[in-house]
Image (cartoon, rainbow, N blue to C red; front, side, top):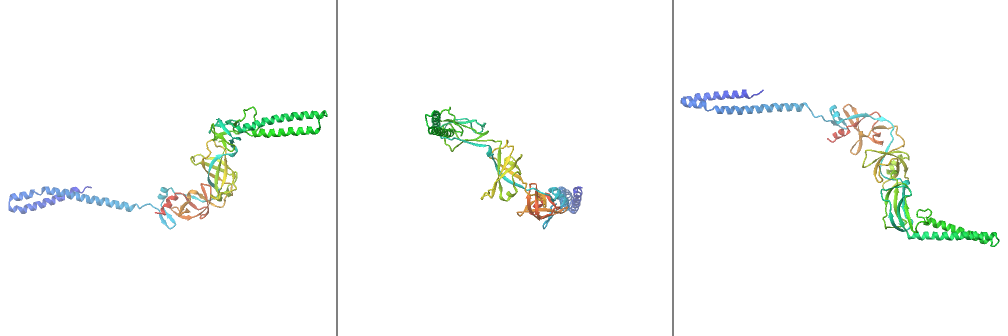
Length: 423
């Protein structure tokens, strides 16, 4: 309700009364002066009335709003939890706002999971290193990195004077062997005709066998691939060929380049057969066994995991890292590449812990660097309990000490409760 009209009306009446009185007093001095004094204060009266109305309105409005604000502040206290030692008491509204969820610790078996990191690499059973057996130079390169090859595919052509000398020695031994074989045949005929002694025939047989052995060794030496030499080819010319099916993953030669026997000219690998080399810490090695399933994820793309199995656990431990190598074989590697870093979760087949309280891993929080769990006392009160953790399989964790099976623990919203301890 507006207060301005009554106040203005009262002030106007007061001013009129004062004006009339003043006019009556001055009327004794003459009619003209009394008439002037009675009319003169009218604009002042209006000004005083307006100012007074504004002042009163401002005072009343301020008092009205101030009173309501005080009442509202006093009526709605802040909804924050109260910390009472190791206990935290909160309202139902806060629990809903913070998303607090309480679950019961169970008595259930749990298989520990070992987490590790590693790198994808080619399976050594499907890798071949191709090199030259003779010193020479490259005349042609037929395959390059990324090319698919089949067994026997041409990789490069070479020319080697050293190989030419060896092949020439083979041809010489072939001629000498033929001569020795003819001499043996002749001596054998002479012995039958009593024209020569058996001793001469025996010496001819030994000579023929000697040349046979020398020729066999020379042929193997002259063969670039370790097999028999091909005498029909030009002396000193030979080809490097792939011994396996796969992909050229490394090429170290170019036309005109000199090659030596200890040099790897090409490396061939099958990209469909990869393995993973993991580094597992010493304390976890006792839980890892051959055949354990492994879930692997590339660090660059963790959306889709791929499966593998432990194929070998190294008996040696690195003295610097205190870890050992664990080889994991994978079945489908079509979308993977050698050299990719991966993270691994080894689902161990070690002993199962059947007598331990198991809680969701999300219920465990760190306070002052040590694990804690919020245990329910009643519907709106929890207490923080220090715990000793056991093994974990990722989503669940064993609690070896601190709580018992059947205790109700906060599995969601623990961070909101923890933050109240630092308020």
